[in-house]
Length: 303
Image (tube, helix red, strand yellow):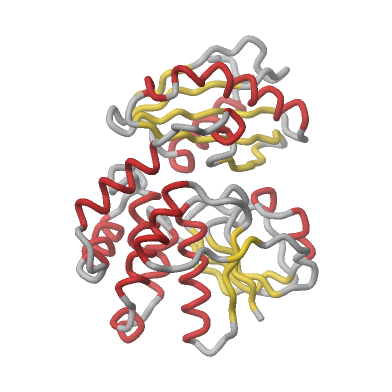
């Protein structure tokens, strides 16, 4: 049995693509089951509801000696603690390589596309693509639209747009309405606590020996978050103090303006660092991570 998992604090791409990778493996004659490594957000719940699919089970046991297929991540710090003792047999991803070591050569497909769902769609041959049901197309399209912010993100490629067009013709529901509902669910902060907001999309990275966590919150307008921002920043400092990280960065992305504001936890790396507006920045992996790398290389002097 191959256990297919996405990263901790899963987003829609991690969960939807895990289900579809398990389906793809099964169609290739390999028994596989998808799992999620955390609670899902409102957007992911919406996608599964529209697809009429049950959410995959929550994986809460050890991965020790289990055959694993990683989806939407490959950095050890973004998976469960027992990940390094599992047997990683495959990876489908669209992120940078992050220092993973495997026991044996795995099957790997990593491409610089806007979503893991797009990578998987390209891995399917014409026969498999033709056999995709409307419900399965909703999972793939929902994941693609989520990670590319409805094709607005700078990570969006021509191949993502082609995949979206192909999948949109198969979903059996109104495409524009689906996008509107996804964006509303993605940007909703109503009723969420400071801790839930911080952990909504939180990922671990290691850069130049610095242990980082980056949380991204996508909003229609920064005014949505304004009443909660102080509480989220306090929670960020508490989380940084209680975990083995050197710095937490909160990236609040205004999807209408196409810009982000960055907030930093209290850290000896950058004492007194102030919030920073980043025009044009929407992508954590394509824009923020390289920027952070350059700042770390220059000892945070611009901050």
